[in-house]
Image (cartoon, rainbow, N blue to C red; front, side, top):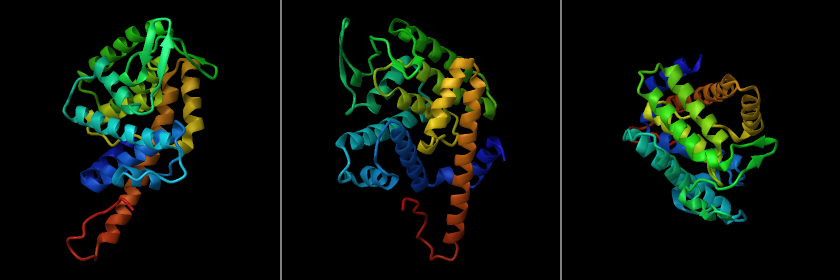
Length: 269
């Protein structure tokens, strides 16, 4: 099945209506997104931290702070999307600020001191491996243009495929502008989830196990100037994730049959 058929099945099964499942899914998003950025917490440790506030023993405190920051940013992102708040540059900055609230750094530049935790744009040039991101003096203009493009497309009655592509494109374009000193990857993936929440679509997850392929897709897309490369990677990830969610939910539904009434679903452990 392609992702449109998978989305239809996901909704028809009512997976998105199960409260425990939604929280489990959000925790999974946080786990994989922070692992991509270097967190050492396992998915179980992430669950316990978010559900019970217990930091894992023997793990850097910075990793736990990264996880709790990301979870708070994700909840904020979804809340704003479901309230149909418009995409604005200020909203993207708010998301970034929350995502690095306890882990962002302060940078001293020739233009003054920049506290990354406030969602301020970078005032210096940055690179990642062989990738050079736009000069800092272009960041605000490029971000404003991206916001305008997103809103222009969201005004149109888009078919599901284009809704998904819009979320993938926003993800790619924001991380390619790299407007912040810290948290660009997390913020870009959160923007993707924002658009998916706006359209009431299942959320996409970039799995930590796919990190190398993810980075390569970003690089290849920039070098070849072909957004279809990144779309193809994300579509594969999305279809794989939805198929696994449907399979797990169907298995658990079958397991619930025959149990005494009132127990309901508990998908956390």
